[in-house]
Length: 166
Image (tube, rainbow, N blue to C red):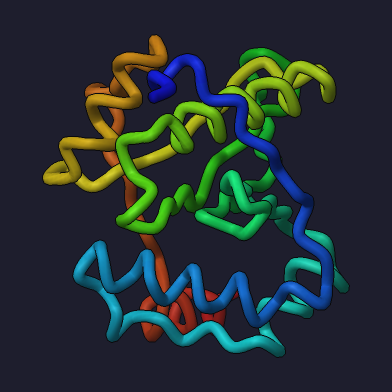
């Protein structure tokens, strides 16, 4: 049996016709994260933002039979301190029956390859504080938690109210 570091996963860039599959993965991830009720994305909104506006990208993680076992969705960021772009991983999801086999590590190796190829200086992501498997994976990859930072979110009515003040 292959070890975590021995896995040679394959990847496939998501295309417009994959939008429904991306949405299914998003729903599975939301279920895992106990946030299923928060998914309002539709095939139409994802298609617009991913493939018309090109605001984010995704790739599929392929299993031994070439079927999709997971996906990663990411977008570019910019660091004013570095004066260079980075990548933010919004989602990494591996279906439960494929976890612990190295697919998550392989996906992070792939995003690191993409970042290096594009000249990006960093790859960042957030994870829920109870998600020990992704925390352990992150640390095993050499990632460090940014304890001195607190994420904030402006959305819904608060975002609309603030926009109306502009």
